[in-house]
Length: 464
Image (cartoon, rainbow, N blue to C red; front, side, top):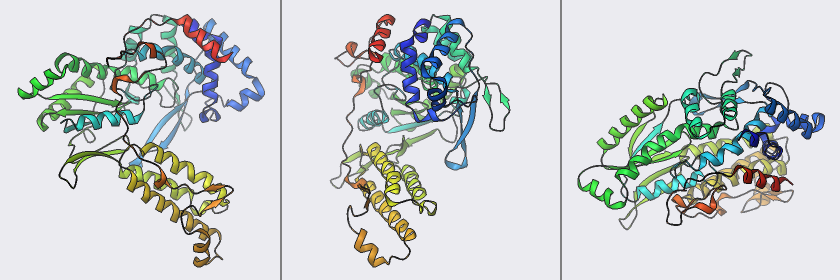
């Protein structure tokens, strides 16, 4: 298997994916960026040197460069930026490992997996809450990525990977260390660096223990449906996990005491098997009528005018406040020196991307409000840029739909984005690796033995 990681085709695909990412312009501790490789070193020479060092065992993972990004509440999130060379090696490792572990992952895990997205998780939550799963355990693992135990993770990797060289390479990236912002060095004894190419896959491998725990109970005690009916008649709860990376909810068909007991059970299982703890202040038990926020959506059951109760997925107030803050920054006094066309190139992608994400829900009123807010922000920006214009002149030039335009661009109106219900796909989500083995009856993917030679052959055809 290690030969697959070192294969020229695999490394070339890894380089294309890493260099095509905007992060390729950000350097690690060695100050090497994509431009430096392409113009000074040369891509073939860069990949040949990396391949040689991997094959002869001289490859050494360099420490990641620590940086911070702001979080809500005044906190910061620490990111670890690997060198470009390490990113390519990690991507090659991910190309080989992902098809193997993807077969073992469970259908109710949606984060950082091929063919799956946040809307799939929201669709499953919507489906379950409309079927009587009214109580929700909102799970929050305290500093999840920072507290990954390396011994537990490496045991999980070694269960599926017998090649010791591959296992040693994974361990080398985990133990590379951190160069902190003030210049000091810190050993990485636990955790996976947020910012590493392979980190999402390793985190999914680690948290699959949580998935396995709930999937085993579901298959053994709550499947097929008649068993769930029998449990409810006996007063026992039914429950199901939905996870997106380190964010998860447990949907409970029972009462509040059942949900609280489950919360305690999850806390004990995480501490015992993964050496992690739940955040006491963020892990809440909520009723669907009161609503909860997950992946930017507020999910709440409300009563319609005809008396029927329906579960709605609405953009949360926090998500709306976040995009409004971005629009405010883009149209602030510091951008008055730009032309209107340049401003629209900044604002339109923000509006269009946000609307595309939240189009699968009851978002029409929110889109209309956001369009109104963006329009007025741009009008005030024009007023500051051209103080000699009167309000009458501004109204004559820009008032009305699609009137704010320049350089062939028009201010995007989110209210024009069509909204629809995202259809629940469940176990029918195929992956790029095993589309031909999905069970049409709806069962999860069958375990397959991967043909490594065929995989490299497919990659070689792709890059030839």
